[in-house]
Image (cartoon, rainbow, N blue to C red; front, side, top):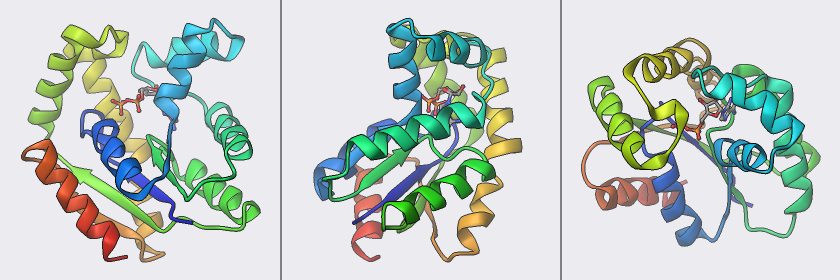
Length: 190
Ligand code: ADP
């Protein structure tokens, strides 16, 4: 199995690039952001709880997203591998993912960090906010909060994967196709 963690700050282009990776390597896309938005749309209890965090740009509690991923893995076993997009976002989630991978008889092959400058992130997210309808893309204050959550809670995961020799940095600036090409080259060389 080929299991990839696509990593990077909000607005880095993880969702867009995940589409290229799943097509190229025939993988299953697991985005916790999308799964949570599905729960909100379906008016579930989990969705209601998650929404209060998401709308303000805070991370949803670990227990909620870990359980969501556990159940997705159980329901999608016959696959070539997974692209985890927006997960893990804390060291606790990274540890839980390793445990879940072991239970499934596999492991994370690589963590791919899309690196993008902060000014570019904010302008991309504000741009996306005009059409995405996402509450958390509206206004600089919420976006700054999401970037702060990333810097404080998510960025440290880099060291967790570096210690396992699984960390790869990919420049996330340029055209969508150029970035996809860089990612595909990195994964092909694993
Ligand atoms: P982006 O990467 O642009 O922030 P996502 O769709 O990945 O977009 O995430 C949107 C929001 O969903 C996050 O700001 C957070 O509130 C919540 N979320 C998504 N994934 C996680 C996760 N793994 N842990 C905690 N919260 C999450």
